[in-house]
Image 1 (tube, rainbow, N blue to C red):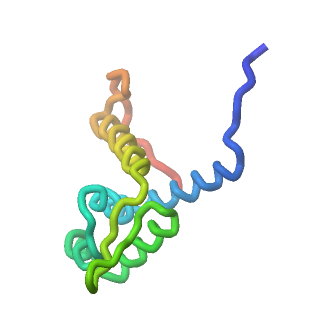
Image 2 (image 1 turned 45 degrees about the vertical axis):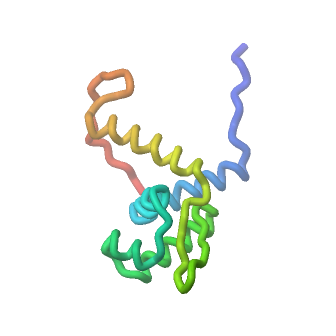
Length: 120
């Protein structure tokens, strides 16, 4: 008889899916990567990312909604920082995986076809 396999319970699975959707936006991923390096305000993020301030503010709100970043006031400015170090670990693992894909190699060194497409 086979060993019993476990499933992820539904509430946890739902939260994982929500966070994955938040991370599916390249601007939000860039913001997380930047905030891991330094506390930044909206103006600084706008300059670095070269996008509209309203877009940056919207993305910051989404990240706050999922408790991935925090904010604190310094004088007249609000500075944002990474609130969950686990998320950077997750991003680093994703980047390592992408490096393998971009190099056209599996983790065991075999060549792979890196022309896969993802359906949204």
